[in-house]
Image (tube, rainbow, N blue to C red):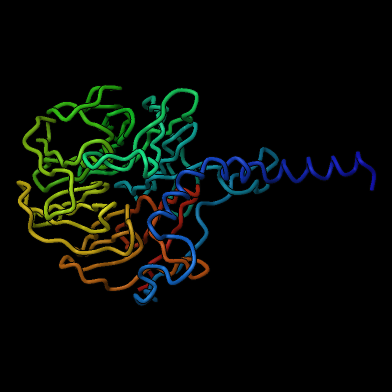
Length: 357
C-alpha cells in the first residue's frame, strides 16, 4: 500500500469517526467524575445486586438522521445530554450541550424541530481536584470563555403540569420558563451574577413543581440549598447548608415533589436521597448506589433514582436493563404517561426503555 493510500485510509476513518474523537475529548472531565464516584472501574458496581426489571425493554432511540439523498445518515450528534423531558403531547425534549440545545422528537424517534428560544451560557462545570477543595464549597466550579463550549451551561429540562417547559442554565445562574408557543415567559436569577439571595443562584441544577404551582429550585454546585418560589416567581424560603448531616447537602443535584407535597432531593456527593416537607423540614433519607444525579417521580408515586426504581420509603424495587449489563442512571431521566423511561447520558446518547406491562 502506498503512503498516499495510507493517508487516504486514515482520513476516511477520521471522517467516519470524528464525532467519537471530539466526544472523547469532551468527556474527559465527566469520565473523571464517574471514576471518582465508583461508577466505572473494576469490581462489582454499586447496585448490581438489585434485580433487573423484566417489564422494561431497551430500544434504539431516536431514529437516525436522514441525508438529503434520503438514506439514513447515522446517529444524532448530541455532544453531551444532561437532561430529557416528555411534554403534554408525548413529545420528547432532548437538552444537549451543542448548537440548537433543545430538540423536540416524537416518542417514536422522529425529529420535529429545535427550540431556539434563548442563548445559553458557555460556562462549563468542572470537577475540582482534591488538593484545591475547601469544606464550605462543593467539589465543582466552572470555566468560562474559549475553554468552555457551545451551550455548555444547559443542565436540566422539566415540563410542569400546565405544559410549560423549564430549562436550567447552571453556569449562567438562570432558570427559564417557556410556554408551548416557545416564548420565554419567566426569567429567574441574574444572568452571570452568582449569589444566594431571593433572585440569585450559584450554579442551579434543577426545578420541581408542587400541586399548587409553587416550585422549587435546587441550587447546588455553588450553593448548598433548595429555594422555594410562588408560581409567579416570588421567593418564599430556602433550606439546606453545606455538610453531611441530616438536612445538609454537599451537592443538591435534582429535585421532585410527590402528591403529598414532600420534596425529594438527590444529594449526589453524599450518595443519598433526602426527603423534606413543603417548608424544608427534614423527614427522611436513604443511601443511593453511588453518586446518583437523575431523579423522576412516576404517576403512580414511585421514584426513579438514576436507573433504579424505588418506593417513596426508599426501598429499591429493581433496575433498568441497561445494554451489556451496565449499571447506570444517567445525568437526567424522564417517564412518559405510558411508563416508558428515557435516560439522558453525558456520553451523548438518550437511552429509551419501553414498559411492556
